[in-house]
Amino acid sequence: MTQPLLRLTDVGKSFVGTNALEDISLEVHAGQVLCLLGDNGAGKSTLIKILSGFHAPTSGTIEVDGQPVVFKSPRDVSAYGIATVHQFGGTFQLMSVGRSFFVGVEPTKGWGPFKRFDKGLAGEIAVREMQSLGITRVTDGKRLVGSLSGGERQALAIARAVYFGANILILDEPTAALGVKEATHVLRIIMQARAKGVAVIFVTHNVLHAMMVGDHFAVLIHGRKADDFHKGERTREQITDLMAGGEAMADLEAELAALEASAGSTGRS
Amino acid sequence: MTVQISDTARPAAAGTSSGRSLRNLTYRPEAGALIGTLGVFVFFAIFGGTHFLASAGTAAWLNVAAELGIIALPVGLLMIAGELDLSVGSVLAASSMTMAIVSGYWGAPMILGIVLALGVGVTAGALNGLIVTRTNVPSFVVTLATLFGMAGLTLGLSRVITGTTSVALNPDPGSKAVFGTLIAGQFEVAILWWIVVALGVGWMLQMTKYGNWILAVGGDKESARAAGIPTNRLKIALYTGSGFGAALVGVIQTILYNGAQVANGQSFVFNSIIAVVVGGVLLTGGYGSVVGIVFGTLTFAIVNQGIYYTGWNSDWASFILGVLILAAVLMNNTFRRLALSHAPRSGKKA
Ligand SMILES: Nc1ncnc2c1ncn2[C@@H]1O[C@H](COP(=O)(O)OP(=O)(O)O)[C@@H](O)[C@H]1O
Ligand SMILES: [Mg+2]
Image (cartoon, rainbow over all chains, first blue to last red; front, side):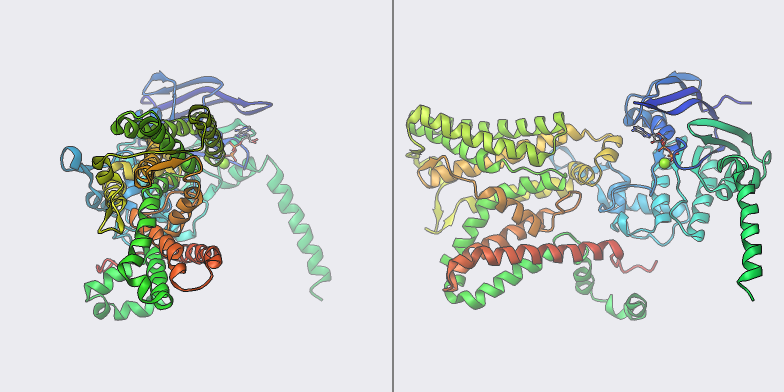
């Protein structure tokens, strides 16, 4: 196989008292989607914070393009072409679409002391990039980010990451707060980014969403990698059971069936 | 549902550009502030009568607005960036006492007193910024501490050096003309300074990338830092600006009133925050405009002075102000929610 864009080897993170992550090894390839599955508290956010430069790992190594790297800050990370879209996508609720798209990389026009932020251009580019991801309802770059729907906000954040040349895109629960239609749209955008050769790390606890777009899957349980498999190697039931802790789901089904049976015999008469 | 209805009527309604721009105004931070200013102006024009509307009445509130505005603008920038500065009262007192002692008590050239006074303001501001960014203690606490600390320092040093708490100054005609004249015998030259500061600060917030940084830092500090914005340097610069604004008013007052007192300036601590908040700036940061802050300042000044023209007992001024602040903030919240729930109509069909 080709060299992975990003490789984690035995990465661990311990906070005072707890081991949030232990011995995580993962590979992410260009043009592929790696789905990171896990229940609440499994350590998904901690892993993302390591990959976006907010936490330093306590052990293990990270390689980008085969070169070992140490992320010193979130800014440092973007220099390696890694972009993270945090949950709810984009955080500048009260800024306009155009302004927020270019935070920190504002296009300017004019000269010397009259150099100014080209808000018109910023708005145009932001709207254009969102439209290229199929968001046609946003036509005005002056709109506030907070007035966009959850899916549109995800699209804005993804468009921004891709526009500024991210080749590793990390999405934290991008579909969690969305309705069915919007979630589908975000999944389509993930596939678009994948088609452009971007490596995507898609964090979710929705097995269905993961199976629709994933090439490769990793399941985290209590900070450890419980399973690691390629598309088609597991059924949906197997993954759900694994995430819920082994046989728990089958037990629950049996219990529910028993409850239903007893309700049928007494309640329906 | 009303959106649906107006959709069909849009071709006719959107035809007038003034109708469209009026509607777009409601999506801007200063929408509520503009209504507030117009409201209190009409109110006092009715109850204050011709004296309020005469040039003396206008000068009264414009003068108050100018001095407050020079401080409220940089304080407002800080608040948009998500930080408070309560220390402006003591910074004003410290810089005006510095000037009065240097150029009045010691008799040094006026220009030296002015430069040192502004230097005190800039230093105090930078110090606030350094402490806030280095310690991560909330700026409310840090600047509350420097407010008290500097008040004590000013009082103590003034008494040690001069033996009194108020020092006279005899400004030369040049400084008087630049900082402390009354134009047409009524209008403080500070009004011109306020306009200059408003244009400068407005340019920076609306037109430059630094304005974008300020909005971003106030909106979400962590994301702004992740996007590569030097958040600490930005905040130190903004605190320095706020110190400069307070010191400039200190210089203006000292020259205008031919002297300084250690108790000067404390009213600006809360009044600047009122002007900024009434002006539509979100107290937690990330939202606001310079036009709004200017209107907020005007609203405060009109209420502050207008009461004297109504013939009512001026004891009620604070009560009216309290009601007004609450009303203004509620109105601003409404407009902000409006901006967050709808897109401004650009006239194009989606
Ligand atoms: N800053 C922190 N300090 C201490 N413990 C933490 C910290 N962040 C996360 N943890 C712990 O690490 C574990 C994994 O959390 P997290 O990565 O947020 O899980 P997930 O995102 O999968 O729900 C949890 O037990 C959590 O309490
Ligand atoms: Mg999480």
